Image (cartoon, rainbow, N blue to C red; front, side, top):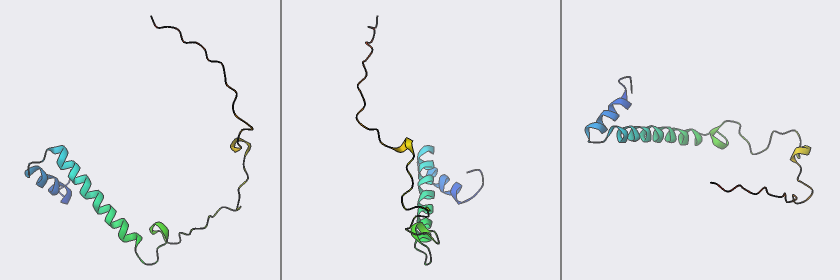
Length: 93
């Protein structure tokens, strides 16, 4: 918005069309997000790109082991947790 570029011109056109400054800014952001999205779709459909539009992306994991070792902190508990007695709340005065 600080430099005289096409975004500023678009913003000023929206203001001239009767939009509030917030509405004009929202319209500009929407226009920019549409441009970025279209470019992402174009990049993803280029020949030679894999999943997600990246060259060399595969479905296979690059992890060394098929099933990684589970650490003790990741193991499930042996049974249900024991109920703990609740402390009664003091009445608000």
